[in-house]
Length: 91
Image 1 (cartoon, rainbow, N blue to C red):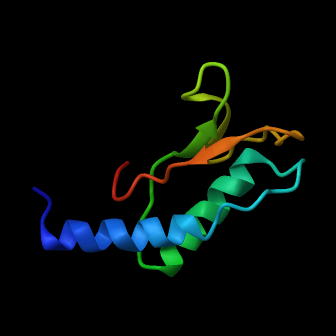
Image 2: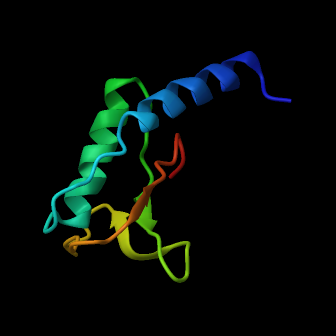
């Protein structure tokens, strides 16, 4: 059973993610998107320090290119779908 603090944190993050389901322009680099995700979560007091904050979704469904990771120079291409999954307080 989650604690009250865990439920509050979940609600805060879920509200934040639900407002972010907007398309990103093609050609953004994955590392830049990573930095944006980390900055946006920091705005609401959530510390995301993992090297990974998302990944592509497609035929293999999970953990495929593009990987939204710190310093990844790969650009997004038209039609790519990503899942944003910032890791909270996880290295």
